[in-house]
Picture: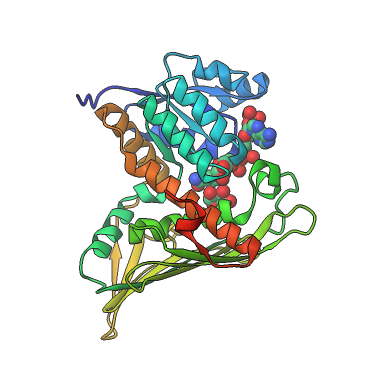
Length: 341
Ligand SMILES: NC(=O)C1=CN([C@@H]2O[C@H](COP(=O)(O)OP(=O)(O)OC[C@H]3O[C@@H](n4cnc5c(N)ncnc54)[C@H](OP(=O)(O)O)[C@@H]3O)[C@@H](O)[C@H]2O)C=CC1
Ligand SMILES: O=C1CO[C@H](CO)[C@@H](O)[C@@H]1O
């Protein structure tokens, strides 16, 4: 039974940069508390707790999972550690909000979902924009007849990162780095979210740093049923772009900042039609981190797990790995052959 007044108590594994934003979101969320921060280094945990007003700090991730007061954990560790710590958290009875990319491969992602289900805890990836009210409005337009029959989904997420530190996890192959997992995850996820189906085949092409085989840009094409095609590009080597367009036979819907609204003005999207009309839709402007935390807390309080989020994460992982394989082998990959269900 839903108890909307129940406080959801959170723990965070690792003093990641992104953890700062989530700590603000937890403080802002309704009936949520950031109860404990864990770091590999206990002094780092103490300092972080002081700075971010957290009740407790511990010097290991295990210690946080042993804390019976914690309901949910946020896992902003390097991708190579997402699988292990999600499974350990689920076995400790904690709901898991795990950063993207969910895992290193689809088998690992499936195992994460299996253990979460077995222990009746929620699994969700940390893609925030899905929970912003704008996403709901866009989805309503997509599911209505506003665009006619869907034909194309095109997206880009890039950032020019000349000064990325050499030790950043995005540049480390053994930590699960690379632009496809870091940025392409959003484009593939948005495509599946909009088309609500897996592609039949995919093709990818990428460029990697010579010394470590980590991709710094990636372009992909995905073929869907009913004549629908999606393409995307992502990378660390061009300016900030974060847009998608879904085009149908009657009109196209364009959102030029889907991963996070630009700072000026209210969040918006446009529908442009065949008659030359362009209609602008504006939405509310809450912090998308807070929307995600509120949604996650609501799921916990309701006692009803929402499997669509782990399904979307696993499908994103599946397409991502297939398209990566395609780029490595320079061939079109049939999804059914690559990972039979
Ligand atoms: N959803 C979103 O908008 C965003 C998502 N992300 C995702 O969040 C995750 C973290 O990214 P980011 O904040 O840049 O990460 P950071 O490099 O800032 O932090 C990662 C943390 O993981 C812990 N850690 C444990 N083992 C290792 C290891 N072997 N090497 C490095 N760190 C380790 C460290 O915490 P400690 O030492 O305290 O234990 C470290 O602070 C990634 O999966 C990334 O894709 C990132 C930014 C935005
Ligand atoms: O998920 C993320 C959000 O966007 C960033 C780029 O601006 C990424 O690097 C990060 O990992």
